[in-house]
Length: 298
Image (cartoon, rainbow, N blue to C red; front, side, top):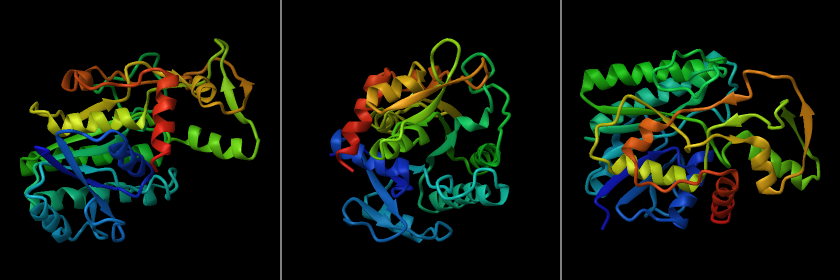
């Protein structure tokens, strides 16, 4: 029997779909997650229908059905459908989290893990970002995530809740690179990738879907208090050309000059201190292998 129970908001999104598949491929022994859907779920045993987050009753009912919920993971948003340069559309990301916090309080859930983004930091600064670095988002999406994090901090303080915002780098399979690459590969159109003078493409802090699922389960189960923000990625950044090579996707190089946009990476030491036992895929080949394994279970 699992001794940690949580609900996940955003089961039909890109990351949500990958995590549901990851939970089938590599089930967590001590954590059970119930998945929120905007339409009735395909199987009531795996999740619940909650279309309007401003109405807390579906979450209250699900918490009662599951014998109580320890944590709420908030991964719903409009990043897939909204224009990331449109402040009005991106504001929805703040409103969704605000409603989720109120619903969690009504359902007696005191721990929330909220999806933020490395986009809050902006362009590279010559070293991996740490959580205390200044925030300089480059678009409305990043600015909305900054606003959302500030909202979480205020409401956590006001309500006595534990709210941790995860500044996620790139989730393999939910990112633009690998998804676009597979679509292009199907049409036999090579993907064009910027290549810098050192011979590598852009370097980013990626994470495979199985590693992400394991880390989230670790954060749900930990007895340590979670900080207001945490960077989330694997230990070493990877070059995008290495990911394409590992995935067997055809691509063509576009030589570009040295740029601060080549290295936009995260220092995730604080995360690893909280979840030292979690096994992570660190190399490009291992990250792609996780993605391909989970794709087979979608």
